[in-house]
Structures are given as structure tokens and as C-alpha cells.
Amino acid sequence: MVLAKLATKGAGLKVTADCLQLRDGRRSIPELLEPLRDVRGLQADFLAFESDGAAYTLPRFVVRGPNSGDPIRIGIFAALHGDEPAGALALVRFMRELAEQPGLAENYVIRAYPVCNPTGYEDNTRCSRRGRDLNREFWRGSTEAEVGLLENELRRMRFNGIIQLHADDTSDGIYGFVRGATLTENLLRPALAEAGKILPRNRNPLIDGFAAQDGIIYDHYEGVLAAPAQMNPVPFEIIFETPQLASMEKQVAAMGAFLRRVLEEYRELISFAQNI
Image (tube, rainbow, N blue to C red; front, side, top):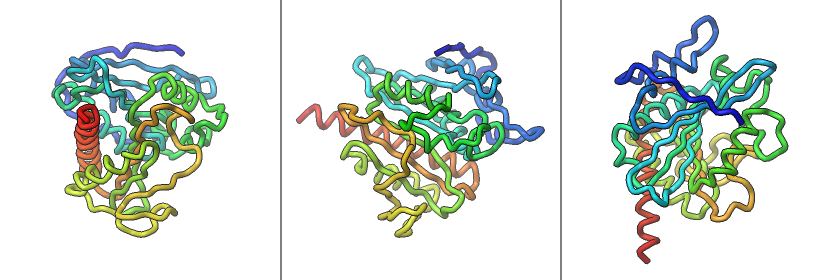
């Protein structure tokens, strides 16, 4: 695995949706990531791979909060589907916020992967340029380079929690999938309530083909990004979906509110468990 360091310049840049515009049929990853350059407290590097002979990278950003000597390890993943840019923008904005307000990340080391499908993101397509839906490829012997890199991260980092950000063009409200640790639902419910102050919740009994209760789905597609099998302790795993037809600003704001609440709730749960 090759790591390339992120060059730094231009502090104080505002994170806006302008970076998501298609120009000459392509969306720019460097433009998306520009607001994270030269941000103190933010570690940045790239995981390199090739796609049909062309060089690409998966960007990774790390924030270490105060009191993180024995940290809670969280991985946040976005743009597994390249035509869902809200998650990428939300994660860029969120990581800058954490770097500038490190108290929000107290006790945590947070690793963010804002563009997990670089070729699909550039092309504004759900699948990668090789025509693969990357979020159906995990732990199935995939030959897709992006999947291999992310599987390696999931093995090595042994996350205590895994969060995916998505946008659903068939939903009229926010919802989430729960997987992994039994406490996951206890994190998802208050986080959905927080995000629900910005966008409505999808309360349909059937969402994305799955039975749902109050915007929560307990099943999942095979091959989605997830922790390795038999991992111990079992991490919490959450997939958060915004309605893709909502305004970009509201989707990004809802994702940020959701992420902040998950961190708050999990920190409290861990603290409570340690004091029992």
C-alpha cells in the first residue's frame, strides 16, 4: 500500500457545495478536499491504487481528540456510490469542524474516508468506472482495488464503530440501517431525532425494499461495507441515508447533526459502562 501525503495551502477556506459541480463531465476531488488543506490537528494521506491503468487515491483524514490515549476508534465512510456527493461534502465539513473544535472528538480517534469511489465520484455515477457497485462487493473476494484497500483498513484499524453516509433518491425522508453491536439502535434513535430537526424522517413500513420501523431498518444488502466477520468486540455499524432530492445544504447539515449526536451518545454509553 502506498501512502502519499496531502500538500497544504490556503487555510480558512469555506466548505460550500460549489465543489460538487460537474465541469467537462467530471467532478473534481481536489476541489472537494481543498478546505481540508493546512488545517491544524488534521492528519491527511492517500491510499493509492490503479483503475484500468490510471493512478487514483482514496483520501483518508484523521482527527485525534483530547484524552485519546486509549481511544475510541471510529471510521466514517462516504461516496461509496459516486452519485451521492452529499456524504462526501458533509464529511469534509465535519472533519474540519472536529479539527477546529477538538473537544467534539474527545476520547476519539476518527478516521474519515470521504471519497470511497473516486472514479464514480468523478463521473457522477453510482458504480465505479469499471461498472461495479462497490457497496455490494465487500468480503466476497472482490478484485476491485478500492474494496481491497477499504477491507484492509477495516481489518487493521479494528474500529469500535463504523458509519456510512448515503443519499437515497427514492426516499422522502431520513432513515438508517443498524448492524453489529446490540447497542447500535440506542445510538441511531437519538441521532435520527437530531437529524430530524433538519429533514423529515421516512416512517414508511417499507423502505428501500426492507421492512422498517420508525425510520430504522434491521436488515441489509449483502456485500455492504462492514466490519470483518468474527471481529471481537463487535463494533456498532450504522448506515445513515438522507433524501437525495432534498437541498444539498440540508442534507449536509442533517449528516453533520447526525454524526455529532452519535459521538455524544457513544461517549456517554462507554463512560457509563466503565463506571458500572
